[in-house]
Length: 179
Image (cartoon, rainbow, N blue to C red):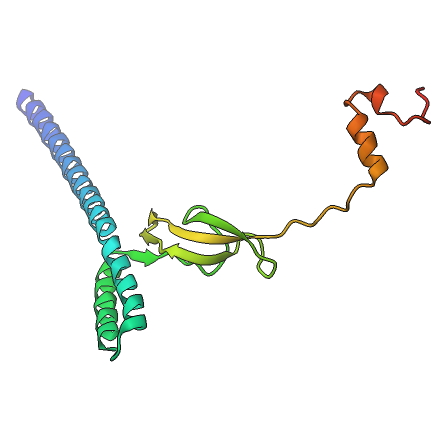
């Protein structure tokens, strides 16, 4: 009997140790996955200026390239580089709609009669997301709707409001009697 009891205790201890070890392995794997994800995010964030440089070089080559070969070559290199980053989950922030403060940063506001309030007018720097996380907001110029002009006040109304110091008694018209 004592032997059977001791065997049962040791079996329980072994099962408990096995479960703890399995949980430990899962924790380590999860931690390693998080560290890898964070390292990838840092690396991709560090590579974004290279992507910006490609965009600027392509734009400049389009203006100055006599033969068009340089711009085409740069565009192919940029696309290849972008495909590699997209495999890791990088996505460009869309800038063809209204301002979204989670993925856009308004650098300027401009009065625009032909655009609705909050519409993105120009992109200064592209923004990117990695998975569900924004790693760089898009820097944009946003439309501001022109405020309607107020009708001008009459001289009598201006004189009356200028002489009123805000108290009820002094703001009453001369012909109005206090009740």
